[in-house]
Length: 126
Image (cartoon, rainbow, N blue to C red; front, top):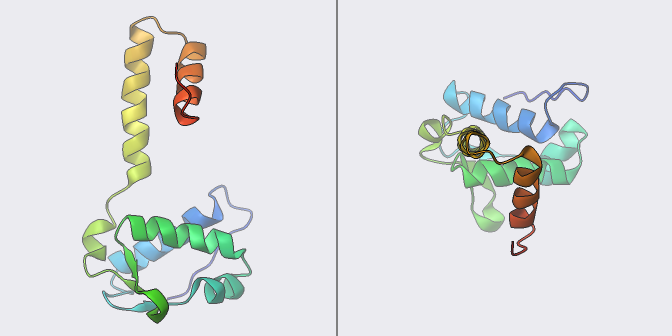
């Protein structure tokens, strides 16, 4: 598998990595059990910051596309192909859009929504 990141592209680098790995899994270029390069190795190969690759791996692991087996390495998850279609960002965006529309229809202002959201994200009591 050949990963290419576009530093000038509109998508964040970690998102490009995630999408390319998911595409490779979906097209059977990466099969369950296939070993992936270490975070450090992939970061060096792509001339990226380790944290960028680590974030991509962390999100792929959260979505059960890859699995980390301690010091043995990182591998494609047995159910990776089925899990590639799950997009939590899209789901969160859809849910937030529905909720925001409900608030607006009830007369809540955008400013009130932003303040409440910020307070909740910062775990402050309202």
